[in-house]
Length: 129
Image (tube, rainbow, N blue to C red; front, side):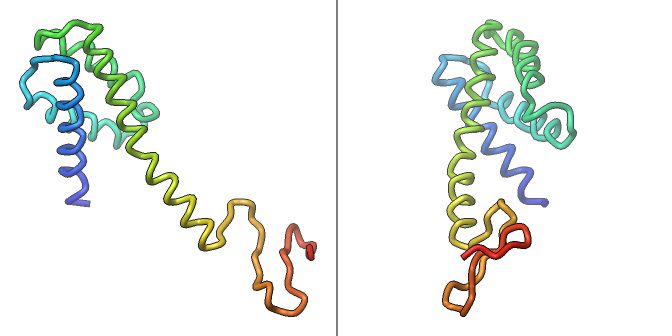
């Protein structure tokens, strides 16, 4: 949507900026928002899974021009990957809890109301009491 893209770029750019500052990198803050926009656009295309490898390569190529070493750039890239993965964990756990509460399991079983007479779980065409 129209709102999702800019917010994603701002959040990811801010995360990159904070991680870079914690590593002691002195690159201009605007570069992190520009890179965030580039990474957002690259994620729209099925180039690689979650930009693994591509993001690392871009950081290693671009960041030395801004006064960082290749090791610092690769460290920044790995920490940005880790932050992206860690930030998605609450969503994974909340979806799991929501699915359990709604009774939608990925096993494909049909759940019935246990208060109904003769109710049971139907699995593969067989009724299990």
